Length: 254
Image 1: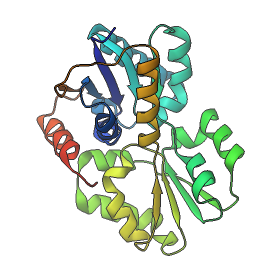
Image 2 (image 1 turned 180 degrees about the vertical axis):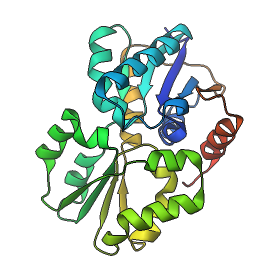
Image 3 (image 1 turned 120 degrees about the horizontal axis):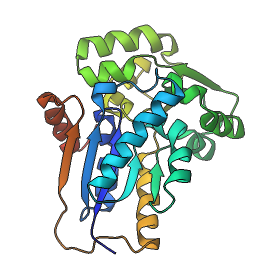
Image 4 (image 1 turned 45 degrees about the horizontal axis):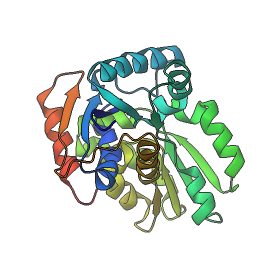
């Protein structure tokens, strides 16, 4: 089987950072990206609300002939991925994870800041990962409302938020784990506030490699020669969301 789309969803346009990495490895696939910006942010919602919303989006993507679904939202992944995998066993589900293990692998002895939503940091899935690979030099920061500010796209608000919430760590942090797919969109701004010499980690690259291997194992790779198509859907139906999505998708360096 080769036909069908790859469904990708996030609480907003932040998952474009994941889709960019996927397309580098799988340029011939067709994609449907669902941005749930009407219900953003997920990090402030209850577990039940997140699972319910994720299942609604998942069903929508299946109705649009998706052969696999990528959860490109760390909060949704932490809370809803196991539920969806148990219920929909015939569809490969690939879920983003905070890249904390990469710190363990590549920069274990460095001062580390994990930036993530409240939902991700409090989730069982993240806590198992964190306690397994804890370097004892890590600070966990619940970035309440940051995904929403990024979604809005107001540069002044973004700068003020970062100064207020991570300014205290200036020149004290060497690693930053970007535990929300929105955050790589402001990586440069985070770097500036922290002192300009920070190593960033996010899970997008590893997810894309894993997705490719799963598609190959299940004989789901699209073997067409031409580049695939991308369909963008946003729950808020605001035209500016689509504009920003394609702008970020085309940028070589976020």
